[in-house]
Amino acid sequence: MSNFSIESTVKRYPENYPYEVMRDSILGKRYNLSLVFIGTARAAGLNENYRKKSYVPNVLSFPLSEKSGEIYICPHIAKREANKFNLSEDGYIAYLFIHGCLHLKGHDHSDTMDKQEQKYLKVFKIS
Image 1 (tube, one colour):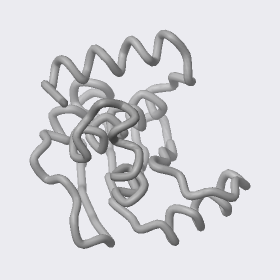
Image 2 (cartoon, helix red, strand yellow):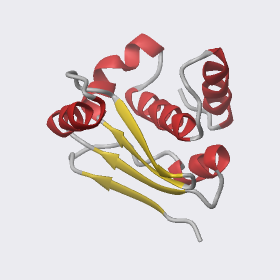
Image 3 (cartoon, one colour):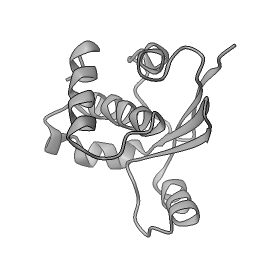
């Protein structure tokens, strides 16, 4: 049995995307995934503690096992970056979710990953 949960420590996050359906499409229905929307302080802390990086990330993905993981998205950073990608703020957050899922699936940044991201943006009509 799979599990999917969404939590938030920030006031506003986009709820209008089918995150669970997106998860199913990218990772499979049996993948256990937790999606958490967080503020800049928590994002920076996680990035420092787990990746030894000293900046506030837009998305972090952590595989917990072969069939489970966590994705953390910082809407504040996403809001700042959305225009660079010609996406709405909510659309960019959905893109970051796709990006995080692809990392959990084992993809590294590459042309292949870029093509997969574009495919899922079209499939889910994200703009």
